[in-house]
Length: 235
Image (cartoon, rainbow, N blue to C red; front, side, top):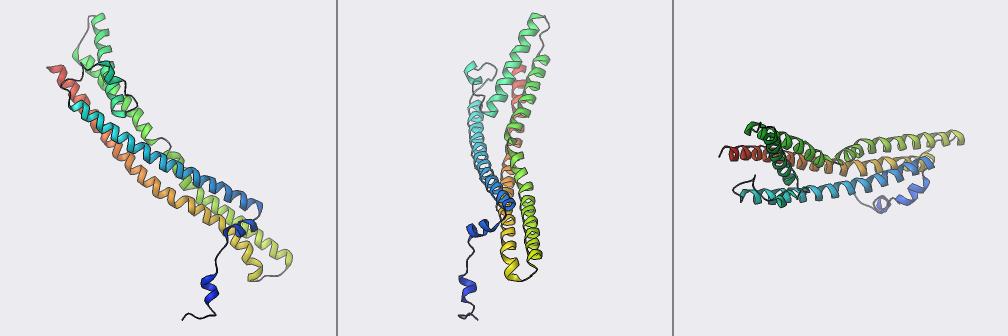
């Protein structure tokens, strides 16, 4: 039952700045590093999410544009100038290598549709691998934040607790009033580590799912592009 005697327990608040100032230099350095990690992690998550959304939109727009064309191999060179779009990069590499193989084959009097198709498919495979790496870019940094931040927080806590008990041994008195300031300061680093790790792991999982979706989509597009080039060659 609530009473005036218990009111201070509900009204008491923790002043993070005061707790930070009570930390020893090691704990303060670790806390500052974790704050920097948090800013970096949020920058990576927001930037990567915006990038993946933009790439997916541009991919679908380019794919829709290709669907409206009856022939791919005879499209003007201007269609190959959108390499910032992953789908366009695959298309440009495929068409350029197709016609390069055709030109080399004619010079050697050994022009064959099979050689053209093989070169086009190899180009698609290389461009596909390049774009998948592009999708996954910076994800390793986010995974590093997820892994490292809790351990850094734990390191700061263990160090702070060790310092608190060392101070108690010097004073030769062990009471909650003596230990509380040092332990609360030590726990600040654990809180900072969790503040970095929890949003980072959620963001990482969301971005990883988006990356997998985009990878599957571009693999399907690459297969469809190779099939369409092969069908055009047979006409």
